[in-house]
Image (cartoon, chains in turn brown, blue):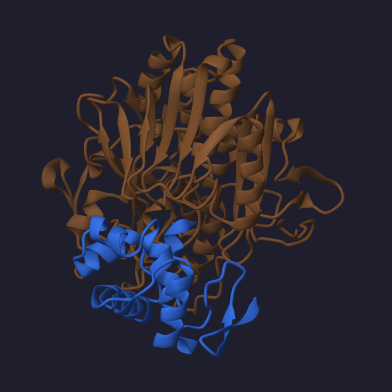
Length: 414
Length: 105
């Protein structure tokens, strides 16, 4: 028997375990899936927890529920990957697994300790993250008793998981404080190392306009140097200082420590990966999916979903000794919830930035791109069901995974 | 994509003003783009960073991010901001004739 080892049972690892279980010859291959946690969180739900729009029980399920029969799920931390010896050592019982093919899906985590002063006295008192379950729940507790003041969100450095989530947080904060009748007592400030609201020019302009409409102040090109939690002060490298009553941090994102320990990562512990084949740049039998890779696409579930289609074909080709013919195009689709039962949608790839228009079909849409709409919001709400029931189970959508320019319009920016 | 004349030389630039072909770059072009970016004179400290970024980009194929520059060149973030105020990674990339760092996805 040959071994196909998957490290990480998050969105990418679970999805690929399902695809591989269907496509690999089970008489020839044994699939092992390793994760340190028994709980699978619906991560897009973290955004809604602080405002109480989702309850904690809405967003988690047991990982084992999504593991297909025939796949061995092992709950353990990973001590070391030794790609030269095709060997992985687990922490639990020091178990050693030799693999024929390895898929790394160990994701990315936040590292607030990378920013000076972030974890001092103010941490989880009036400084919170919403990229962890604990952080989002603690922020929920704080917001219930918050009756006005300056709310500052800071993005420490790029890349981050779900690059639109901080914008959504601001849009939802505007909605939440409006609902509570205290919007006039709250100042919303968005600080980002980018030159505008978002990364690419057209989306940055259009999403920036939404910020202005909602009276959210954007402090662009803001590279955080330190937090002074004694004075509730955020300081940038170029000498700007911003006071806060509540600081919501999107800290530095880094790949898993095991990638670092194993000497397989770049400066942020992401595995150098061919952006088209999704194979490790260095090892022919090592594949990388999702946030763990260094490919220049968004770190997001939709990217994993589209990439998985390429990955399964290339893995099967490699196993059969054939050339890799499938190429990932960096396709990404993101919902941007903007409050008031509305949401925007963006769709883009390595080569084409988010553009306005209609998705997925020209003329009939039905989803308008880069525009607030109630219909998009319905799409976003139904996505939780799709995630648990279709995506994680590796079931293909009735839509092509490749990016399409059809229905999109290029615009002149003023 | 457009053609722009910088320091007397015609070069390809994208809509954000980044050169698209690093081979078209010259030291004279660097001096002129630096002026556009508000840096009156390029000192040996500036050149050290510019050269580090060009080398890193040609060997890895990726334009270095701020973190890649600090960890690779040994120059602190604070000093980088003193040399290239506001956004050092983006500024150096422009001056060095490279694309926008891909950390900005």
